[in-house]
Image (cartoon, rainbow, N blue to C red; front, top):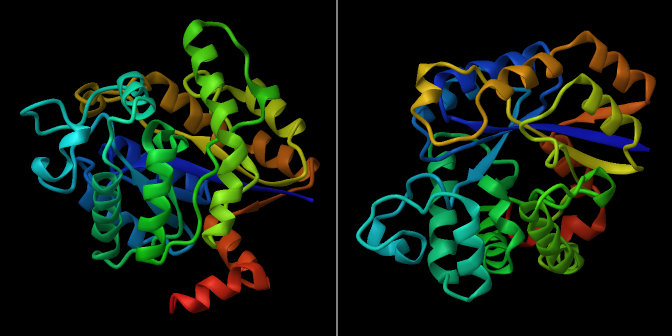
Length: 300
């Protein structure tokens, strides 16, 4: 059996991104989305989410390329000295994480604050993931587990893509693959011991910024058995996006075209892949004794 969650990241980033996510949900494959607590269009995204009861909404935890939900003094390890915003990019963050220069308690507090901000609007947060997949680092992963349990969220993105979907073309990709190999072994074990659940992995990460119909078809036709998450970034490249620090611009509109194409719906039908949301995933897992016990124990 093969099941697929299609999750649109960056909900709340810009109005154009918000509009595209809504379109990809109504007319296309998107079943879930993760909302940025401090995104420029957070309020608009919350309003749109309230009008889409079938869209499963999670928290897109941001620890780089953005601003914190807490005061700068409370998350000093994540900010350059005397700055109000997070550091830019994943490379510097990765170096600090590996070197033990990040404060786990501060990270937990920030993640908790971001989840609570979503929940305060009435959103039932179904799952967590992170911008630039920072929760692949143990210092963030451990903090995210504790924040998730504290806030009653029981599903996290598995940020590890099967290596068969990667093409090693640069030193940067080799560096990323090295991180993946060193951290993926303990990820599921630690998550399960905490009573949380995760899909079998992600697809689409390596294709981010270069996705097209041919690439999507290859990913789906080679999808292993199990429950998988397809990570996508639909949006409109407009003046508002021009003011945002992101490498994903024109590619967002291409992804929107893929996600709303009749061809991809027929592809999933032909491949007998069931399209589900994170909410469906959590509900089905909660029916098993393995997950039901910690859920009941936390009073959710």
